[in-house]
Length: 188
Image (cartoon, rainbow, N blue to C red):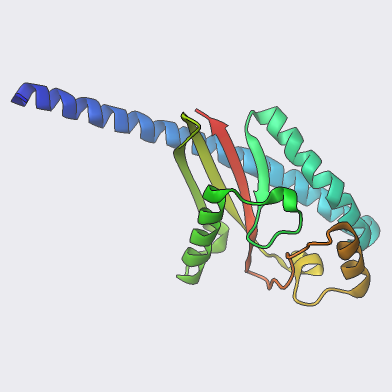
């Protein structure tokens, strides 16, 4: 390869990397907005339910409302929007291989001292022969979460969880633990 051909090839490679970086950054910023909107609506519904009727009724509402909100935000945004965890409550939220690897990475990063509120990962991956933007943002366990996900759960709450989620593994969390993550996906 001549020096000029090498220089052109290098320039094209750098240009391609810059465009890929810009595309990744643009998608990441858009994704953060989608997560913020979804989280805001979900949190609002959960807070409203807790104030109006307490945790037992809120669990029943969450069983229907959370998937409905995810579907609505998916339709509105053009992204596939959801939540997942290593300890599932709803089996429909099971992580795929990429999500499971990221959840484990988040646990490692948290153990190394990273702030769980800032754990985020985004990348462009190949799926089925096409490029797909994937993004996850950690969900740290807050005090209010422990009413339904904590180490000690009141009996009526535990009974309702057992009724709605017979395979529930999403218990035993302490404040600051990683409850799971918001997950986004969008074809490029």
